[in-house]
Image 1 (cartoon, protein in one colour):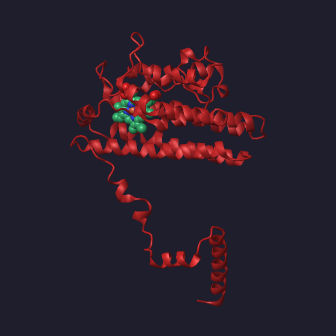
Image 2: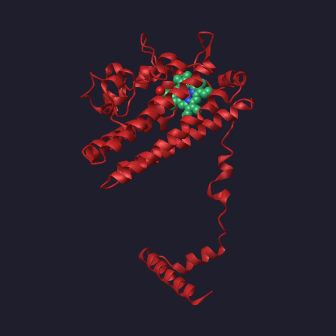
Length: 318
Ligand code: HEM
């Protein structure tokens, strides 16, 4: 070891000692710990064994593993999206460069999700899928809490209310808005007011979480951050273009890729196979009906009217 390295090491030791002193800790004991501890391995660092132990199936159809793995992969991407949204919302004095870079990350995550959804459309044997899905009742991706949190962190709650109630609830408080969320209406039988079991269980577990998130993101969701910091920015056009792309990816392209998988497996000679979550999925899932947009003010009246229509033609084409 050359002298330079020693001097550098000494410097590091001094800094470490100062750091540990602040907390009243004895550096020497920690160095002993370092001496006895093992080197970190890749498999421990990313908890690989745990990760690979999380695909427990309900049946012995091999393609059920594909189904579980792809859901897990999607949830990990959702987690990445949420980490970016969290950073944007909590960044002090946020500037345009930071904002654009983080939105670009979210865009990349969604692009991957959209292009990989084919795995769910053509990547499983239909015969296997139609059998193992019966063992999952009444579970449904509908119950993805992270998906709902992405929505809440991206826009104002009014934009997540079912489209018929949006005009009436413009000035409603959070509790009233939450009552009318589009997905709650979508999983409730209109005539009887009866909620699907899938919805009942989801609400029981997560409505508290969604209320907290709604409070936390009320003035700090992506739309609000844009309006408060960048609507007059000199980079406005570029930012608007990025936000529109995110909206398009999340609310048209991802939803369409997903709808295609429902069409592929659940549509049989004009007959509809019941969804595991019990919604009338053909009427509930299409973007042109839900009309969920994170940034409605960034789309023209014509674009509102045509929301999700461009992708309609090829539904169920597989
Ligand atoms: C073969 C693959 C799939 C089929 C056939 C399918 C089918 C469905 C259906 C029919 C619904 C409507 C709710 C219900 O009644 O169950 C739904 C909702 C949903 N699914 Fe899937 N799904 C598939 C894969 C996935 C994957 C991989 C994810 C990723 C997490 C996912 C996430 C969701 C979400 C977030 C909703 C709620 C959408 C909304 O509220 O607009 N699905 N799915």
